[in-house]
Amino acid sequence: MLLLFVIYPFVYTVCGSFLKWKGRSIVGVAGVSNYQRVLGSSDILNVRRLLKLKGPPLGALVHNLLWILIQVPLSTALGLLLAVLLRDVKGGVVIKSVIFLGMVIPMVVGGILLRFIYDAHAGVVNAVIRLIGLGKYAKTWTAHPDTALYSLIVGSVWIWTGFSMVLYSAGLESIPKEIFEAARIDGASGFRIFWHITVPMLRPITIVVLTMSVLWALKVFDIVFVATRGGPGGASSVLALEMYFRAFYHMPPDYGAAMAIVTILTLMTLGFAVYVFRLVVK
Amino acid sequence: MSRKRVLIHVVAWSIALIWIIPYLGVFIASVRPYSEIVDGWWNLHPFTLTLDSYSAVWNHKTYPLKRAFVNSILIAIPATIIPILVASLAAYSFARFSFPVKDMLFLTIVALMSLPQQVVIIPVFFLMSDMGLINTRLGLILLHSSFGLPWIILFLRNFFMTLPVEVEEAARIDGASDFQVYFRIVMPMSLPALASIAALQFNWVWNDFFFALILLLSPDKYVVTQTIPMFIGRYLISWDKVAAASILDMSVPLVVFALLQKWYVKGVVGGVIKG
Image 1 (cartoon, chains in turn orange, cyan):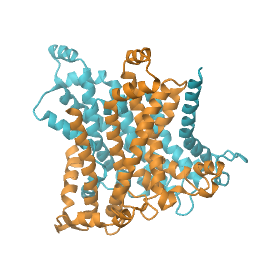
Image 2: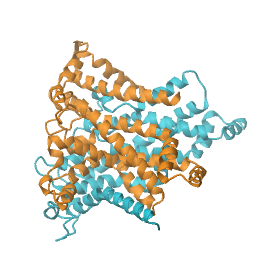
Image 3: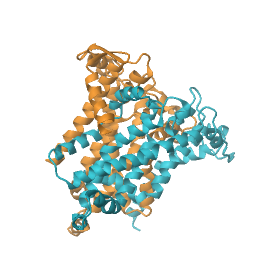
Image 4: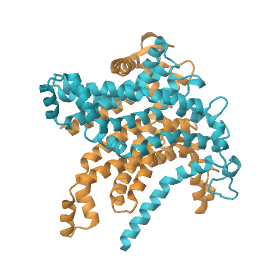
């Protein structure tokens, strides 16, 4: 089963990205021309806007990298902070469950929730903005090219923080209490304990959290599909979505380009996973 | 309580508030008529309680959630049981029997876990077309079962490694075969791990959107996640209906989570940490 539906298709896609496709049939060898076409397209890599240091749309590849750069550190740090904070809070378990819900619900609903809170009229984000007197900035955040991507990324922090928090909570429980007590007796402050004991002791967990978060940020699809469909004008598009458009949405399908995109994506996930795996094993 | 502890409590509960507001909003929006929520569900005057949106999406003409629920259940249950049965045998042999290339195989499994769904989907789409499995539940069940295998094998292998070998050896001395040892002794001892996996895999399949989007083409086959975006109109979003459909959709994984909370979190933590 693994062979038929996972390994064989994977190899097929990688090989297929170097072939020339006409509809479903292979009509020749393409070499790297699929890759040239994909990387040359402004949907994937918008060199002109990048060089001018403009905002999105910058191309799906850049959006994925921005997603990693913004979301991963934020949700990791927030998860750690919450795990440490909520240890001493009454009802901390309840709060943890609520924050963890983002990992339980379908990502499709996650996308709906984001679209909903950012809505110009029905959305709670704009209600808060009006409340603090910045009413002129109220808008549907996901519908404007300069904010669509970033609002989804911030929203994904909201969805994904539960993961790092739960992992860090489990990690904290595995640190012997004596260590903290000893440090406290020696007169270490709360911040010094956190920085010099908690953070280093949780290093293995940080590696896992970072890995999973990076993989997740690379694979993100549902949220974007539901909330913005990559729009407006590709301003919030990601690689997985561009692949979908080329293989299953546009007519006729461009399998060569789709396979090239997804091979690039897989190279990043696989390369990253194997790199971290070897780092940990060594 | 000292001032510092009060401060921590205030911060913690404000964060909790931020986290719960979107859920609260979507819930309130789902039980009120459109006219009351279009300018904000937080305006509580007037407040009319109604379940109209629920019945509207449940019995929708083109995309009834009723049918989507049946489809989702008929896919999620077999796609949970099949991979667990297959993977547990494989994981057991990884954990107990030594054979060459075992480490290599193991690295392969880790690598497979990192694959995005998109990398297999075009060839799978071709395969399923040739086998006549496009737009069938069977096709999706097979795909989900296969895609779930790597992490279930990894998870169970880690669990089996922690089981005492002595019990199994004793049974073997008493004349039990490998299969008997497995089904009579290992399986019953593994129930907690199996509960974790079942909960996670079921939710994963239920929550999946991409595979269903590609393989299920006609509305009568649509699963729940696939149906939700259909309620988003092109120009106007009827938030009351979208909210009701979202609540219904997430209620199933939430119930699974609530029932199996302990094992669920253990699954998330154990599945990634020990590996």
